[in-house]
Structures are given as structure tokens and as C-alpha cells.
Amino acid sequence: MMGHTYHLKPRGICRGAALTLVFASVLATAAATGSLPREDDGGTEIKTRSVSSTVGSVDREEIADAVADAEADGKSGKDAAEEVVSRSGDRWGAVYDEREYEEFEQALDGSYTGVGISARRSARGEVVVTGVQGGSPAAGAGVRKGDLLRTVDGRPVEKRPVADVVALLRGDRTKAPEGSSVVLGLSRGAHSWTTTLRRARLSPDPVSVRRLGPSPSSAVLIKVAAFTKGAGTAVRDAVDEVPGDAGILLDLRANAGGLVTEAVTASSAFLDGGLVATYDVHGDQRALYAEPGGDTGRPVVVLVDGGTMSAAELLTGALQDRGRAVTVGSRTFGKGSVQMPSKLPGGSVAELTVGHYRTPAGRSVEGSGITPDVRAGPEAQQRAETVLSGLGGGS
Image: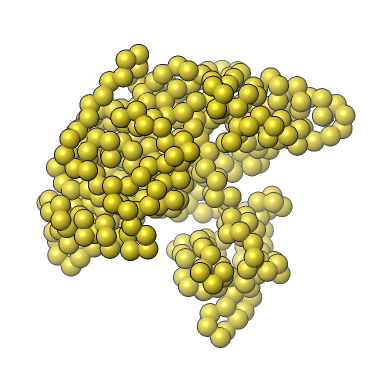
């Protein structure tokens, strides 16, 4: 709750991180993974190892040996690597081929190949278009929010997981390039039709801002879809432009993560320096700190749900632990582990868990998530606005 502020400086923690943490969402599969880049400047791979019994028991050399043996036998090195990672018990370990990892990095830069549609499963089991990006192929074809997506390339999608539907739209499984075509079957009321779209390289805006009422002193909603490159600065700029003492509703629902450095930058909009999170790499304890000079006066409420993951949980935990915001919604996902990418023979990349992060008060997020101060379901935003108004944040 609002009030007490923690300024923790754990024993043995050195200020500043030598590495850039990445808690990245693989948007096509709606899964999140956190990773660290290789530590050196010369391109030599880090040899990762387990840091505890909870982080898996596979290292880079074991995977590399499996890849080499498989390729020597004329088999798929990537398949062999995936089998080793799967056996290791590393929940967040993953293996990417070169193209998949390129897409992964492009997603972190805020771009992806697709048609510009976001979707969800309705209570009736239908796939509903929840958003259409402006200027995208879908927008150009007249697809609208609320349309029902029936088929992709002739395949019914009603019984498919939404993550699979998104993968079909992006062409992930066929490695479809920019400019490739995809046929959508849609319906709107009694009208049904098909349309052919060409995939494009898209760069959605990760941060959107709107006022919640007609008055200049009305609270402002800042929605962060993902912590891709530039999102942290965009949040900070948005906070700087909020007039007077108007409150802020920071919406992190369905935010599957992104760059931790961006989440730390975003935290600097609300904190006057101090600890954001601690983390370990192979047992070596380190810490992340906010920059001084943030706006610490105005009321802040953070909206979260089960889709709030990773970097978004890191930011939520920092604001909650340090008494800077009231959190409203449902328990967050619980992704608090750190991965490190390592290049394998043949060009594929393995991401293996090497540690975990903790909130300023020392709470682990992995597997448990963050419990909001005020629990709320479908009415979460309305409840959050009421809480914000009660804190003097406008209406």
C-alpha cells in the first residue's frame, strides 16, 4: 500500500549491472523468457551452468556435444538440443534456430512480421479480434476490432489455442518471410468473407496514453503492452506530461515482458533512485537501481493480471515493495528467472536458466507471482479508477 518506502541495500550486492538483463516475450507463442547477453565483447560464448537444484542441470557444453553427435549422424542438431533441454527440467530453457532467434531479437527491438491483428478467446470459444494496428495489412483490408477470425489459410481456428492462431498469422511454423501471403476467414454479424493479406514488418507502439475523464485534472491511463526498446523512456516522458497532481493508472495487464533495462527506466519515472531488483547469475548477486529524480508525489495505481509477466512483474514488485503504488487486479504470472543465450554448433542458440531475480523486499517472483493489494476480476479497471480517486488522483 501507499506510505512506507524501502531503501534496501543488500549485503554483497554491487551497484550497477555489467550485463543487460532481458526478460523477453516470444510474442508468437505468448510465452516469456528472460535472458542475458553473452558477457564478453569478443563473441566467445559463456558456458552456462546450473546455480541450484531448481534451475535445471544442463550446461552449454552438454548441449553442444549432443548437437555435434546428431549432426554427425545426419540428424537435426536443433532437435537434439531441444531434447537435452527438455530432459534437464529447465522450465524456461529454449532452443532457437538462426531465423527464430533473429525474430526473437527483432521483437525486443519492437518489430515483428505479421498482419497487425491481436486476438483473444471469447467465453463462447470464438477467436475475437481485439485490436488492429493502424497502417497494418489487416487495417488496410478493413478488418475491425470485434470481428471473428474463423480460418487461417483454410484451417479452422475455433479449437486452436490463441498462441497457435497468432503463430499461423505470423507464419512462424513455415518461416514465412515479409511479403508472404496469408488468407483469413472472418465474420461480422451475419456477414462472412475471406481476404488475402501480405505479411509486413510492423513496429507497434508499446506505450499508449489517454485521459480517463474530461477534466484537465483527470487521471491518466498509461498502457504498456511490452517492454521493447524505447518503452521505458516513453513511460517516463508520459509521466512528465501528466498535468498537475493528476493520478496515474499504469496498466501492465497482458504485458508478457521485454527488456529489463526498459522496465528499470520506467521505474525511474516513479522513484527517486533506489533499488528496483536484485538478481543472481551463477550465484553472483547483483542489483538494479532506478535513476534519481522520478515523480514521487502523485498517486499511482498499477493494474495487473495473469498475463503480467517477467519485466512487468519486476516493475510491479518494485513499486509495490517500495510503497510507491497500489496494485489492483489478479495474481501475476510468476516468471522471475534469468536466462543466458549461448550459440551452438550449426548456428542455433540455446537459452538456459542461470538465476533468479527478487523484489526490493527480497521476494521471489518465480512460480508464485505477485499478489495485488486489491484483488479484482473483470471489473479491475473500474476498481482501479475508484482506488486512484480515493488516493486523490482525480477521476
